[in-house]
Image (cartoon, rainbow, N blue to C red; front, side):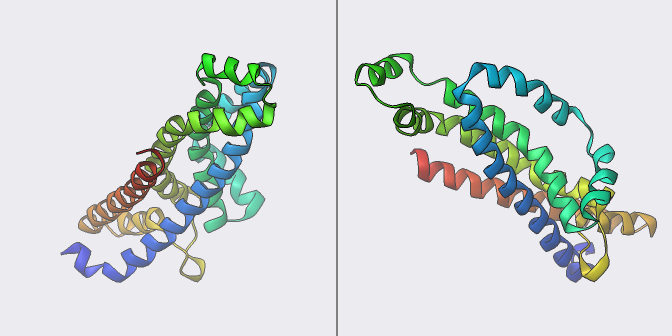
Length: 208
């Protein structure tokens, strides 16, 4: 009944949350792919940058939210940036692990045939890393809607109808509309299932 009664506002909020989640996940995908390729080329670079990645992962979103609002403003920009931060770590860690875990015998075979580092990277290491990459992508896709909702609670805005599910949950809570809160949680779960199903389908197409 709560889903029916609050359908229009929940649908609008779900679209805004989906936009923030997809933008953040897409940005994390691009940045983590480029960084993973860089980290895989040098153990020294990995050792130098990994502590900073860990520090970024360990910093809670509510602490980062006010900083993001100051830097880029509230609403979809901050929500996307915070979602990026929560999705980035599992992607870069899994992708890097896959790139450095290529079969040693195949690496030596490429060396015997005098393959360049570029050929070794894109013809051997990247294909070998795909299962690791999709594992990280599945984790990130699960975290993306959760991150977008939490970010929306801390940095969201209702300006121009831009409120997401997190902001909508705060409104329902302040109005003591508890059935509507359960409906908001259900919509968030559905959004997470859709993202996860999309990644699983993409993984199957790439790996089967």
